[in-house]
Image (cartoon, rainbow, N blue to C red; front, side, top):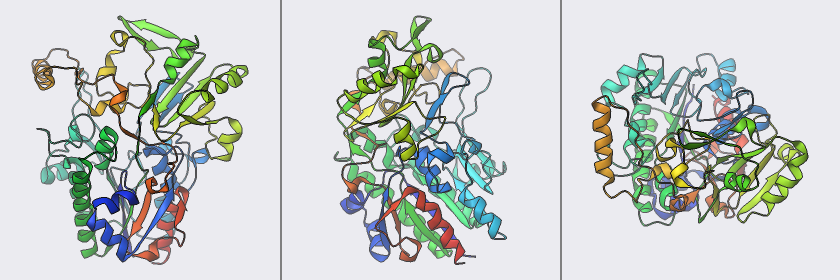
Length: 467
């Protein structure tokens, strides 16, 4: 049986390849590159689900990286069980047809309890004493101690937060992508899967922090180009071909849009006070937004208010599209998890989850890296608060408090959305910012220069159908 690795290089575009990625440029010249008509929204969980099911969110249900759970009246982000994806996956279809077919999923999302044969995914442990212990989850369980023994602990602080993509005591800028690439090699050596899905997030960090035109980006391009090039060469030597893709391209942004603050000004958002801090009471709010990069799902309690809310949204500078029921149906986003209205920004703007009017009243988690508690995506978690005089000293003090067994809050994240210079989620104005599909074997790719995100699953299946 032929074997294939699908390597997800987050944020990769043809523009970046041509700016300074010689190894990937060589692969492009040897084979072929297609531009991908991005998933909408063009965010990690939706894009990956489109790629691995071949259908849109109307069928698979992944409308963003998180959504409002109407039954629990809670916003839930970055959940991990594969059962959330409500459509058959490409590996299931291939397993049904090909005896002996196996699949490894190395850090792609919705990895827990997937029907793949081998899985590795980030998963902290949460003891009852309130600690958060960095670790990974694997299937089979035996992978976890074995891979950590060979590669060392997963460098979790470099996976997300202020240390991600930076040179810090937690590791060099490329630490997490290098570890994941090494774990993909480990899986290949031990199991030789038919399909190996590999996720490399390195470009995601500084492209969002500083924007694609920042002087630090060429160094990032060189780092990930080396990691990908070395991994492709290693796999080729073992008879494995590679298909390289990305989920989205990241565009320069200059305007954060605070929809929940706008709704609060209208008297539509219900705020409850807890211990002197403000929280949204979603179940009691007339209108609220679940913000995720350049898309926001807006929930409206009273359907009669929809025209009024839509008119307000369309008047906001930086808003591009507002989708109601008809547009959601036409664009494959008609699912119960989606907002009553779905809003996309221009590609130079993005949406925050912020709802407080006074930073002193912001919830305690706002100044922390806390991806599960925040009711929306927060790229400010990539920064240390520049207003802190000695941020490293504060971090050291917090860690000492933790070590001594005291309660502590790692409150070092800024509340300044203007710091963010790159984002994604909508369809870029310039197609050179589109995600890409790339292989040194041109026969793997469709003939078209522009392919839809839902066609990727077909590319993978076609490769194995010819085995």
